[in-house]
Image 1 (tube, protein in one colour):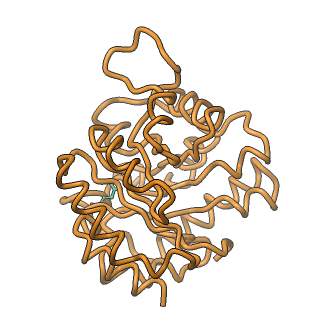
Image 2 (cartoon, helix red, strand yellow):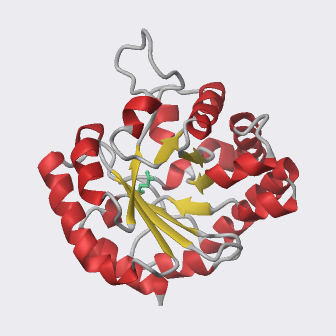
Length: 257
Ligand code: PGA
C-alpha cells in the first residue's frame, strides 16, 4: 500500500430512512470506537435527508460523513440539486462524485464530474471520484483507456497540491450491485496499477502516489482481505455488504488485522 491509512467506506445509495441511518451509525460507532486512533479512515455516505442529523451525531467522531452527489454551483436556479454550501453546514467532509449510477442512470458526463471535483475542492471537501469501465468496454479491451479518459477529464487542471483533496474509487460498472460480478484480484491489480500511473502522470510521482485509491464493486467478507492486500489498493468502497453495522464491522476487523 502506498498510504499509511486504510480507507473503508460505504455509500448507502437510496436506502435507509433517517431513523435507519441513525441506528446504523450509532451501532457502527459503538462497534468501531476502539479503532478511532488506528490507521482506519472510516466513512459513511448516507441519504441527503439523513445528513443533518448524522452530521450532528458524528461531530468529532472517527466516522467521516459524505454526500452522494453535489452541484458545482453554490446557489442558483438548479431545481433538485444540492449546493456545496448546504452540504458544508451539515458536517459533510467527503463528496462522492461520478458514481456509476449517476453516470449511467442519470447521464452525468465527465465534464460535469470535472466541474464537481473542482467545486468540491474549492469548498474544502475531499472529492471521492468514482471511475469504472462498462462490461462492453472491458470486452473491447479498452478498460485502461476508459479509466485514463475519466481521470484526465475529471481531474483536468488540478495542481499537485490539489491531489491531497482527491480520492479515487475504481468501481467497474459490471461489478457493482445485485447483478454485479466481483472482479478478480489480478484484474483489480492491473487496473489499479494503470490508474496509479495516470495519477502520477497528472500530479507527479509524489502527489500521484499519495492519492488514496479504493476498490469498489461487490466487495464482501470473502474478498475484502485479498483486495486490500493488493499493491495500490488503499481501501475499499463497499455497498450492500456494509449496510448492516455488524457485517461492516466484521469486514473492518478482517482488513485491519
Ligand atoms: P456493491 O456497491 O458493493 O453493492 O456492489 C458498490 C458501489 O456501488 O459503490
